[in-house]
Image 1 (cartoon, rainbow, N blue to C red):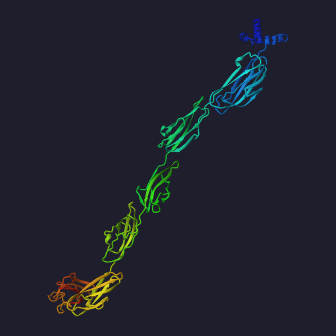
Image 2: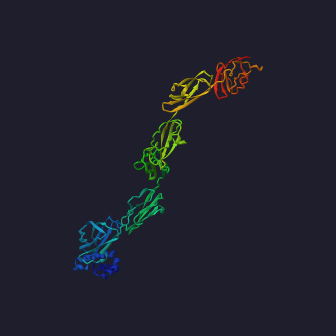
Image 3: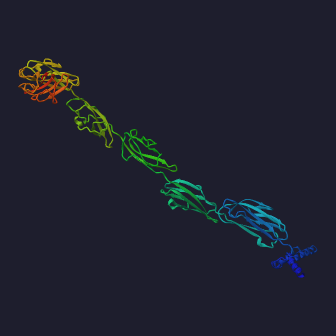
Length: 597
């Protein structure tokens, strides 16, 4: 026990009186006794003695200034604020005076504010004037600053004072702020969409505390990307989902993020108007394949239905046009074009030809017919307005009617116009009341025509005193005679009509019986005409009610009283006989014949 007290006293002496490093090293030897009950009793004893002693103060005084620093966010991003906390402490056994702490903020920070538990801080000089700290006391200073730029910055502080410091190892302290790289933020957000097509779009991103951002794209078939700028050159054939990645480098990096691009497929369509030039007449419909529901447009001059694409050629101006069809599938828009050429139609101007009289003809191919038409036309001629039935001889049109002339220009466009051809005609007739007459007997000559007419001459002239009469009475003297009349219409057209009146043979030589008895007894069984100059006769037999019973061209055969092999009843019948004589005269005979059995 005595030994323990001695050792405790030695430790107390070293603790109180030791002033050099050797004493402190010896103190370590005795430190096991500081906590012992021997040390505590020895200390009480020593203090009692000290109060009555004259031991100089420097023999037991001890000051141990210390400084520490911490930061609330050692990885704060650039632009954010951090708070540094400085703690000054007197670890010694005696008061420490004139304490100052130096904290000059590094260039990476901008001072905002400070707050000290005691003393004042001058942010210009970086000096915190703490003042005095009793043994075991401490003081704190908080400095709020903004992290300016990306990088790693160390904030170092130091403490000093009036008294000698028994422990210099805690007179300096530091803390490092290394901002972490934030996740890149795309200017376009986390996702976007576009329509399938070529093009350049930059997908840039920013990241705090980053020293640089690199970009990549997947899949590679979507296009190519500038790794430094994020500019994408899109493939015109790609559709689907593409991912653009941004990787931000930095001290606490890297940090990454992605931007998703949905590439919607373009709608497709094609239009056509047949690919051939059109003439400015009628309408033409568009031929559309693909996406429907679009609209059509073109330049001024083309009359087009914006909904259906139908073009009114007749209302359009001749020229070459580009028609644009704009359409959408709900996500993307697209357009396609087609070209249409519209040529002007020529103008065919008709001058009606002068009327002529039959048998004259009219030439409708003459230039006088189409004077005033568009120059350089090729003309064709037709019987119908559709110009599908060709007129065989347009240079000698012989019939009244409407014909059609088609004029075609070098572009293949044409105009069809009617031309009226009038060929006036008069068909005059001249008839005799008798085909053959007996010399000296009168007969009547009667004129006629198919239109209004006048008679301008008769021949033989000597037989007719009145040359304009439409009816004449004449007689034959010694021979058959041909009579001629000339008629003229209101249009001035003329026609000649003739009739030959035969002089019948000797009256005693011509015999037509008025009865016959077809009983097959060989006597008067057949009805026929008799005469020496007769070379033929046409016989027609009628009932009294006009029904044809029998006819024959063979006078030698005559009528045997039957009809189709059936014997006809007894009675009176009517005959009409056309007789031809040896001098080629013809005349009619009518009468009745009695059939007797």
